[in-house]
Length: 417
Ligand code: F0G
Image (cartoon, rainbow, N blue to C red; front, top):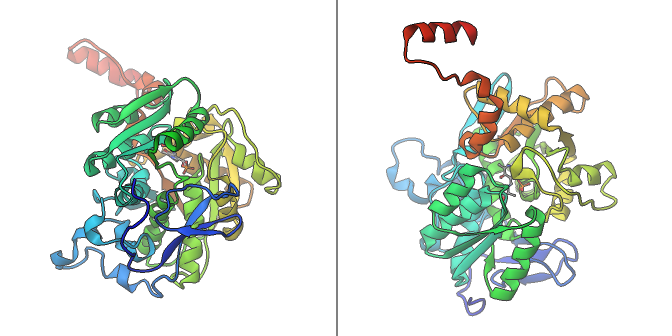
């Protein structure tokens, strides 16, 4: 990889340690500071108004303005990554819909090209990987990151290597990963074991790591929040609710809200609610202890995407919850699957982990933390078809094999309603 001697960037960006503040060159290949702290991409200034972003929406007869602006990530490019437009690897991604159902808003990130929000971070991380001259990229994954990595690496012509917990990834995600051409290492262990191994392997083998420990992923994922704020004409909701696993999204949302507020794009800061499965709840435990210590657990939940016991972005996510006056909640697998059935029955649908949002809203409302009139955006992180098995198990009774006769049809329809 060519980490030095790259041309100057159009505006000044650098990497900063979130723990000790030490700065590094934006093109230095590193994921943590010498002190162990996580890194963050920082820049001198952001656009003072959202006008430049709003003008780029594909409204009106201005086809010449499309191109990069079709991407809900690169529409915000001045605040994402400073890089010549010709070097950007974009599908495009983002530009997902905001649905209103039963008084709640759902930002459906399952509408991204590979069916999850991961594409927003991946377009930026793979763009940076190519800039650095990487030949191979890797991640550990519960499935969605690997599908996204495989797709963007295929587009960029890079070798993709994914580390997944053996036998524990939903079928749709694994199929995508293989179809896009990645090498899939089925690690005998859980996600957290795979994560430790990929960090060691990328260090030793010189492979560029694109898990959300990579600060460029965070820069892309910020745009989930900016785009939903833009969808709302920059009238901030009271709450943004997100499922929490490895804590990349929680971190990205906190950074997005801080930057939007400091640049004056919004005049109030929504509170973040990060929702964990109760069987994979290390961040909830830390929150309950007022973040006085860090917890690690052995994770188990039906929501395989968030089956994570030792989240890498813990420290960034703590800052996000603190900055937004946010909360962390936990929900059971039953609560998740009930909420999933309800989201599916709205005709929207999502994978189990995404439904933790609605389950979390219900619990936080019942506890009086979220009040009746407060406006809420739930971020649905993954598409319904990612995990078909979870659906087939919970709806088995409504799939009925019958003889090919009209009598059998009539009988089946009276029995099952
Ligand atoms: N929802 C879905 C559908 C996910 O795939 C993930 C994470 C999350 C929520 C949690 O987001 O990690 O930023 O807190 N999936 C990762 C993966 C771990 O490998 O696909 P997070």
